Amino acid sequence: MRIRWRTMLLFMLLCLVILTGTCLQGSARVTAAAQADGGVLSADELLRLGAEAHAETVRIFTAAFEADLYGSSKPSWQEVRSQLAPYWDAALLDGDLSSFYYEQLSAWGYEMGFVFPLWQPENAEEIKIVSASAKEIVADIKVPTSYTTSEYIRLKMVARDGGWVIASPLSYAL
Picture (spheres, one colour):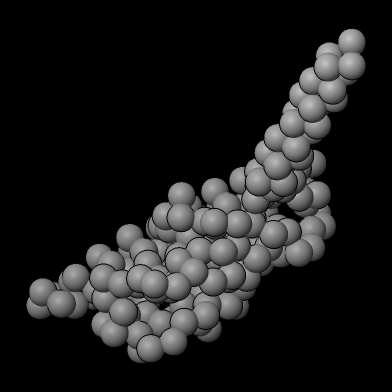
């Protein structure tokens, strides 16, 4: 009888350790309490929206880079701006993104994915929700920012017209 109790106790402890480890390990996708039109925005949804914005930005900027590289002129900023408007806050469009387009696009070229690292959401290593409300959600997301380094980037999204747009400044260095 004594062996059975020990075996049962050992089995229960082992299950508890495995269950606790699994819960802690899976915490990269924590639910956030931000709402848009009454819905809850989870960490996974936040990552999906950020990834969509970054991927579309990389696609548009890469096309402009290649147009400039191969001899035709890149599109006007107004044309590009209108394509990016569904994803980015107006202040960022007219500030950081415009500056990047005019001053940094050629320097970053095919590596601009490091400026917009969420374009490949599968590379996100961890998501930490910093604050969340019905109008704004802020998260720190650990992603590759170079070929050898992963860092936390701050993603701030604000509610606009029933959806969400990115309102966090770009962070990059040449």
